[in-house]
Length: 180
Ligand SMILES: Nc1ncnc2c1ncn2[C@@H]1O[C@H](COP(=O)(O)OP(=O)(O)OP(=O)(O)O)[C@@H](O)[C@H]1O
Ligand SMILES: [Mg+2]
Image 1 (cartoon, protein in one colour):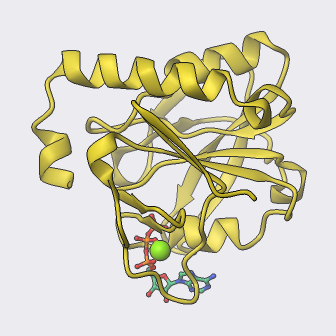
Image 2 (tube, helix red, strand yellow):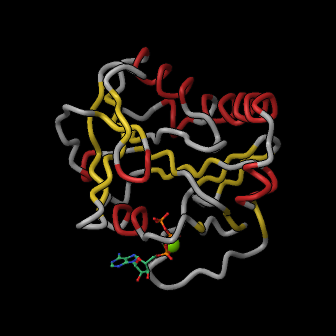
């Protein structure tokens, strides 16, 4: 799936991301959220720029992850502008330079990146456990939305006990609602 994603053209990434973005913008869980953690897309991940801009314009508080490699931990770093003020951090992911932490308990919506998702909402990441560890600290009311391309959604990712599942998996042609 990583290889397939790497082989996508910029136009394919743009068009598929626009379709995913439209679906997310219409989700009540996203629209009604006030404290959003997004991610900065890298290497053909589903693009999040439009969603981040829309969230800021709607007056939501928005945060982006800052990665701490020693602690193998993510921090939600509040931003007020995008994409200004970011510089490459761990693993080359752009992250806010000066920021206030948004405590995990206040988050009510999280856009989650992934290498693959399954029909139960379980997720395969890049193998650091960063999101699994972070998501285990957020409150139950937070709505987790996995963003993916259709080809990244599959029957099972063989989850283990510590793997956190998401409530929605949104791809170009489908929104899986697992919140019921
Ligand atoms: N809540 C947790 N507490 C402690 N260790 C954890 C926790 N969640 C995951 N881990 C550890 O992190 C390691 C990597 O997890 P996993 O293989 O699921 O990564 P991943 O979900 O693909 O990565 P990521 O979340 O960074 O995208 C596992 O070996 C696991 O033991
Ligand atoms: Mg995992």
